Amino acid sequence: MSTGYQWQLAEPLDETMLELVNTEYIPYRTQRLGADGKQLFTFKALKAGETTISFKYAREEEKDKPPEKEQIISISIK
Image 1: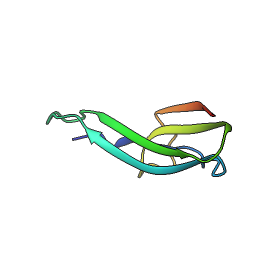
Image 2: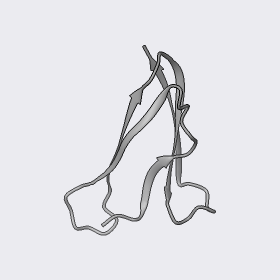
Image 3: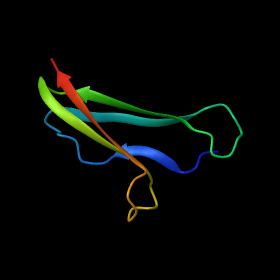
Image 4: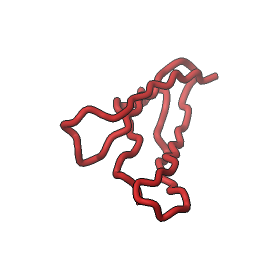
């Protein structure tokens, strides 16, 4: 069981550079309350260049609260 927090896109992607193909939550094999897992994002590169992906770690239902964590990833597509 998870705490309800998950990684989500914080900002729209530059759709000229990247396409979100899939996102999947993979829980770790445990029954502990609040146990975590992995959030797997799969992207397709559309053209060469530089862009960023902005993520936030938040609960989907708490849209008015600031996220627990934020991460910006720089991407170089060749």
